[in-house]
Amino acid sequence: MRDFTLEMYGLLLAAVKKAGYACISYEQFVSRGQKGRTYILRHDVDNLPLNSLATARIEAREGMQGTYYFRIVAQSFNPEVIVSIAELGHEIGYHYEDLSLCHGDFDKAYDQFQKNLERLRVYFPVKTICMHGSPLSRWDNRLLWDKYDYKKSGILAEPYFDTDFSKVFYLTDTGRTWDGSEYSVRDKVNSPFQISIRSTRDLIQKINSDLLPSQVMQNIHPQRWTNELLPWTKELLFQNAKNIIKGVVSRMNK
Ligand SMILES: [Zn+2]
Image 1 (tube, rainbow, N blue to C red):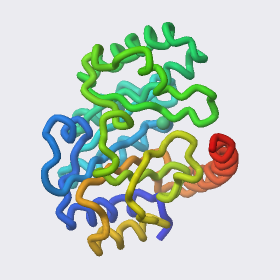
Image 2 (cartoon, rainbow, N blue to C red):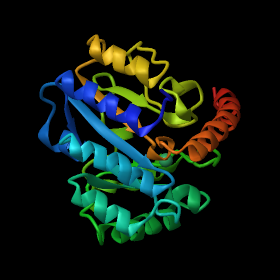
Image 3 (cartoon, protein in one colour):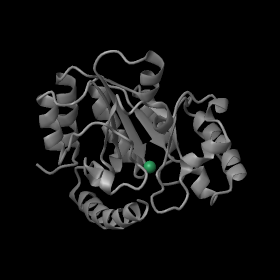
Image 4 (spheres, protein in one colour):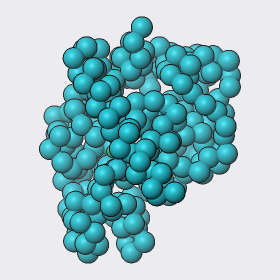
């Protein structure tokens, strides 16, 4: 079976469930406290929002809730999809990139951040936000919070600032691999866990063998997860090319 298909994603969720994890949204994780085996389902909707509707439906069928972070740009921001995913019981959050869109103009970026948050709040009472990595931009979107405070906008938490990654194992499909930290420019955290994962099948086996910590944040980009062969091949070729570029940028930053 090919990796990064919806079937494979369904198998992954089934393994997580069988292992006794509660699959929850980031907002639930932040507001409920951390009890028992917890698996946060986070999704960065960078592109192709309909793919996110597909993963949201699979999760809802399993009785799971997660968080979908939408960007403000046209390839992500789709009100029909946002409403449909919210109706399935998931949380909607803002995947902000205002500082890079405003080319490092902090005041303009904060103004845009507030306006964009309100645009999203027309459809959902957004309580959490998460930065878009903008890997090819020189601006790290998180820098906005050196000068401003998102909590003043009624935001409870931002995963990169408000999660203790010494306790929560961070898993991301960035770069179309689960071992993507060497390819990622910004989507990475300081983690004490030494768990190497080569494929989704490998991840499933590790879950079945109880090799994962009791608290996990899984971040996926649903545009990568598709059954259709043509978009799947396109995503594979595109990510391989992009990983080469990001690998160079990442090494330059070290
Ligand atoms: Zn993103």
